[in-house]
Length: 354
Image (cartoon, rainbow, N blue to C red; front, side, top):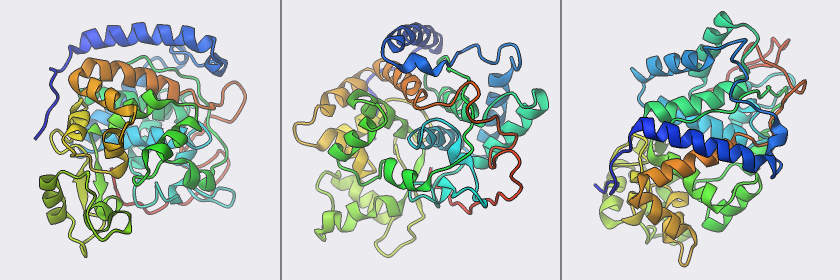
């Protein structure tokens, strides 16, 4: 299987570099409107100084029995931020006042990791009750999940507060679909203030995790209603996927997003795209769309894993600033699945995709 052409960088050096880039990002953001969020890397230093280590410990324990959980938690942060901003709304269950985003197309029978978020919240409430928001739990969890899987670590901006509403309609409209074309992907990212470099860098999170057959089976048997397979699929890879996902088979069967190192955060995702091993159409579009400006970015990340890591850190901090609630807006939920005072929350039944 294809692999990255560069060796894994020293984590210590990556940490230093990420901190430098983070400082630069803060300066740039101050002049670009992002500084208005008033998030801070030291937000919990006095009231809950061990917040990050508590989050990390719970994720490490979960990884012992579920190697996919790191990718799942990272994905939750994406799906939260793309819908009304990074406000923890993706975690809310149905209630008399909440139409849960968990029922949206991109989340229903797909999003997972909610139980681990609940365990993290329980641990934090024991250590420092009423202090750490669920929105910040998702931000910290994404960073720790990436780092624990071999990817970069970075300084997380904190101080988000939790929403008291959810928006299933927005979730159905805003979250990128696995069948999106490159133009549709760009439009989806642009709608939340993210550019083409952010699109490619953040798509690199598909270097770990899984996807259900139902989200790519059309590429195997009836791409764009042609009755044929997607011509951008590597023929050998097509045979492998067809055996895993027969045309009349179970659509919930899981396939590795990165067939070479499925549980490691590295640059292999981009090397896979170069040999047409992108699992989802939205993955392969980054490299196989004729004349696309994303091709050079894919090539650069494949050749230089450090460059990918650096861009990923910048884009994650940028995404983590989307329409956050701070100050007295929102609340600090005591239970991530329901707003404070709501005793009618009900968990949705979910099947894992990632």
